[in-house]
Amino acid sequence: MGLQAKNKVDTAFSMSSMTDIIFLLLIFFMLTSSFITPSGLPVNLPSSEASDIIMQEVTVSVTKDLRFSVNDREVSRDQIKSELTALLEGKKGQVVLHIDKTVPVEYLVEIGGIAAALEANVSIATIPF
Image 1 (cartoon, rainbow, N blue to C red):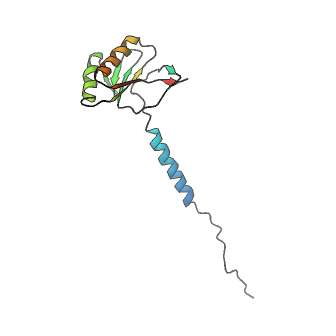
Image 2: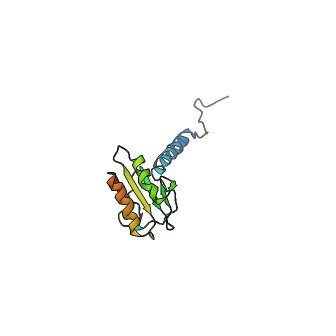
Image 3: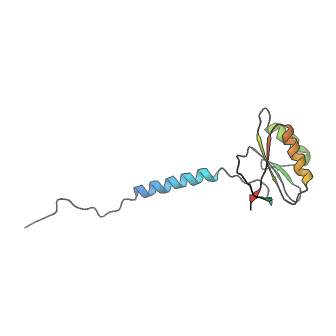
């Protein structure tokens, strides 16, 4: 009496839909993590209640031992104006200042004034409370 079921149930589990989800999550995290770019020099940023993340075109960093960098390239204090002029030439850009909280305000005002004279939008990088 060889009775056999006509419809056999496949007991194997297909992982293809699980791998699709994993790849989509991987792509999502890769894309969103690239929007936040760290500055080139280690800077202890001040804190603020309103801390917005903006796209950084030009980054100027000043460390507590007064080392200056423009877009992760270390420069002297006298070279900042020429570097910003070359990077912002002919366009209205965004300059983000990563200045250590122990640096005197005169450096912030000086670099912000240079960027404002070049008609750039100036933002100060902070960390949220």
